[in-house]
Image (cartoon, rainbow, N blue to C red):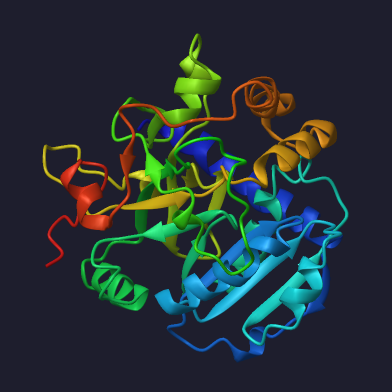
Length: 336
């Protein structure tokens, strides 16, 4: 990278930090338990709105994975989710009624919180419908992964977003609080993905899967990005640029091997497509708080109302992380 590009990157990162500082004034602490965070704790950061039904399993899943503390921004929920979170002893909660879109879809809020509370910690940034899978996650806690990354002097860990869906109509089986969503949304696309390298940021740009296949069949380039860098050993100098798709400094985006080998990587099981989806999509279409004028949700609304089914004859049922590694969707790299 030339001197001019390096300067532009530093300027972008500085702007992101300034935006985060400005936007943090819109956050009101509901309950701050960050004094309980201990050195070495792995922290989870998330932004959510009206996700009460998902929270019991979400919290249980990540507690069992080894997350020590949850730092969450509630964006004006009305379903009781904020009250539920505030009652959890390992949760620190902030609330805001400000625009999700104007906070760069929550990135500014979390950049601030990560800079203030996440410095020196491994931090995991996920949505309430995303479930982090990594090699040996069925037998090793997340701290085993971060310890190995520390030993390997690796500061970031990449994961591909994997859309999960049921066989049949997505609204056929009601989701119950506390239920593992993969009991319903157990299927995924094993192929049908496009991968390009972003020459400016250095990250891989991945699209495809059921959302490209069903919602954007004529223009798959409009489908949402599936590449993420959700797990980072945070430093207050860092900043996410676009959700967890891109991060600065750009070297943190190099979570893959450019020379023919394989770096360890994970998967985010994305349980968006449950029976709750149709109502959520309609709400987000009205709010228009998502990327590019909510074009993604416009496509969802048009397709789902006529044919709410994502399963196809090439769909594969999820078993475990080893299955995903065999399919080439994640890798244990040289972690034994």
